Image (cartoon, rainbow, N blue to C red; front, side, top):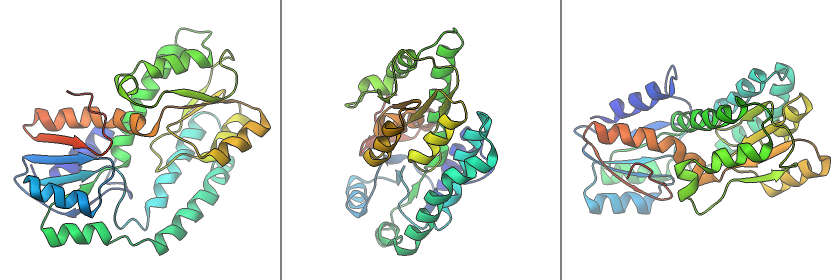
Length: 273
């Protein structure tokens, strides 16, 4: 396979119209057979890959030029409006995070890791939102399985998510960090796959408009404290590496089905082995 074909596969599996702004091919490659796949990749990891004779390194997290990656945050608006949140309120909830992300793009040394890949002649790419979308779908499937039975409680959602193989294998645990475990869970928003979590504003806006529970893969302590001070809604976090790995599993399985040898490292919970 080529790097273009691998990216196209991820985009197709996610159902996206094109490559999102938080994913990129930095050094292209052809005749790829041996892949090193990790959550975070830096210069040291690229040198290891070269030493191991890998044909390609795939990182999950963004690591290069993404001046427009803020656009991926707008997926939060899609998630919120689908749950009945008015569009103007949803846009307001992500406005500050969008501005902050734009500003970070002006100060980041976005060429550090890609430049090392070029010097080494190591094919290198990252795939972020497409794989997060695959994981989001699996979270939604687990949640819908609970809600379809009727009379679901927040604790039932937690238990369903905890039963996913990646969650069971993780060092972290699925946690309800806000709300009452026995409170009803009728309307749930899975806020994953939009570059990063929506923090306080997205969760608050969801709760303000009738959402019973929000699922993030992680949240900052300060944002959580603000939500706790208001005492409204249920917030469930599944763990960063576990949540990300939900999207890796189907993608890695497809690469292996096509004959590629995929070695996982750097935080990947490989549920295909």
